[in-house]
Image (cartoon, rainbow, N blue to C red; front, side, top):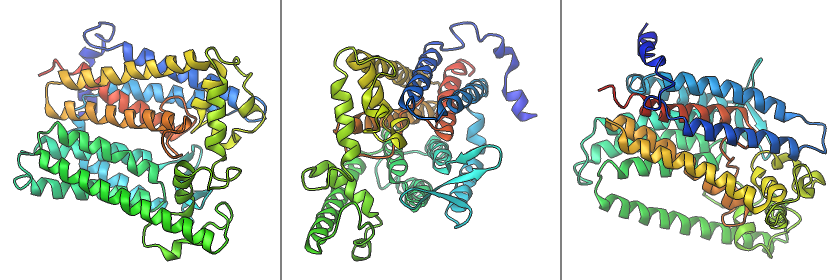
Length: 410
């Protein structure tokens, strides 16, 4: 009954007015989703796969979730944030159990196979849970100096650290890393002392140095023992105390020292992505006319998800790429604007957290395809293929719309 009352049926009939519903964002999301369907089809044009049909189903279901979430008063989630968080932890633990969690490629156990639904990725649900938990903790906290805020920071470190460690254990380093910028952005607008961020920056620099040293030792180990970067995966793991897989170290090496690592092995995806983007020119080769994905140079296992932007750049060129980036810019700018006009701290934190999370996904994915960052399994929102990811993105954007809709109800 509480859920029914929170729907505010009186406000439902005001959806057609500009004051109650921000139509710019859903229109942009629909365009991005449509672009995604067309280029998933194009990426698999030379194969017998028809995952674009499944994507249409996920988008339709995501649209229902988006609308339902936007109609629901976002303040309700403040009451149930801890239950959502506990459910996420339980699911993350469940996926790590051998025989329960599903393993795909590289030995990563990241999915649960649900009857009648298919593969479900718990890390996507965990991002939402961490967003709720962080916003809930910070809403009732009084932050000032680091010393005065120590109790809140410890609670927040546990709330964020536990799911991140469980996600890393899968392993899914990409999903874990995108959580950190979201949490730090929410802390920043909560007026925490700048000393905290200076200290965090120092810790981050130290961690980067440790990882760089470990990767350098890995490269030396491989060469000293005359091993292969692409074949002898796991050979170095027992010599390191960092919880990294050798294929993750290979990705860093392929970015930092592409001439040193076998380009026909781990550096292949990155090189072919650069060729795809560079060959598109101003207007591109035309829809379904791209050769990189069609001929299999851009591997078909990744062309329709993590490297979908490469397909767009090759077939629609610079103008098509800018169009996609512009649509994301509209969505992200509106997210920041809604965070600024929210009438309470919880709403502002939700809108900001969602926007930063989406920004990290967009930036890292596109930067990865053009060689600015190492290759990571981070999909492009609303465009990359993936059921759980599409649904989570729709729910998150629905939260932002809810903050906008209920900003006057105070």
